[in-house]
Image: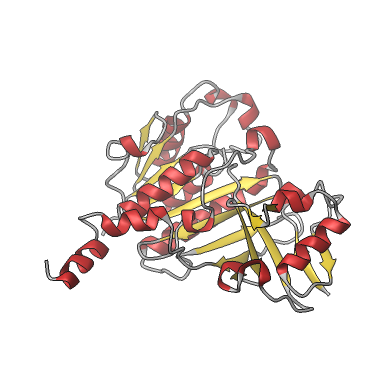
Length: 234
Length: 90
């Protein structure tokens, strides 16, 4: 069976994620609206100076294909409204964007549509990756709403950190599509990779008043909704 | 003593230290003690006495939401982790 993956973001995290998944034989749809800039090159090591000005999604997809993988590029900003066009046929969606709103939108879309997902983030010397699957606690159960969180562009990140967090996110994604739910509903947090290479694995329970989980429960096509309807005898 | 693991985004309050030792019976007391040692950090964690929605606090690997919230008990060997939402990655 082919496990199709959609990757949102082709930058510091998206590079190692896309290359790892592509090399693992997973077809990857890459969504990113941005172009390569000189200031990206210290951490986005999938690009070279020759790529400056080119769309990141296209350059990363070409690199995956050149290494024998399968990849499609969409030069666009991922939004839930356009999700069907932008790799909506995926089994798993993985976020490596630099934008709190997008992270929440990706997670909410995955929860609502019964997809597995990984949300990755990196900043300064650390980062985290959260894995989610239908029925598990979700990103919004953990962090309730988007905030004006600092990003790499304004707060900085050590170049190798995005490679390490991206690798972890890719490993979580591969585990999930292979049916391993060990980390579904868990956050792997790396505080400072210069000092402590191991993550703290923190698990959390679904939040009863989580709007994303509650929306998923009433979506007519989800298994959960079918079970509820069936139990009511309607 | 218990320790509080401070995320990198808040280490400007702790002179760069990632771990702060505290003596406290509950998470609420621990945050008060942390703020006493490093003034200002408490306001980054709490709003009107509640944990801000983009910050989660764990005792060991357990979310304090499952342990009684800010009244979660803390013992001497516990590690309290502060995990904020972060967005970097590009």
